[in-house]
Length: 73
Image (spheres, rainbow, N blue to C red):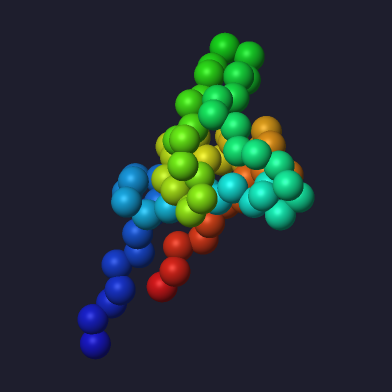
């Protein structure tokens, strides 16, 4: 039996690790977030879950708009 390789979404950009969930409340996705000395740029199309290297920070700053996505399998 082969072992499934565990994929780490933080190192594999093809695997979505964040999703915009604010649409449920009628909110619009943001295009950028400023956190003190850092500006985080988000993709224009957030209709599906996507990968972002700053996903943890984004979910921490805006938990009502973004949720982490757990990899399947």
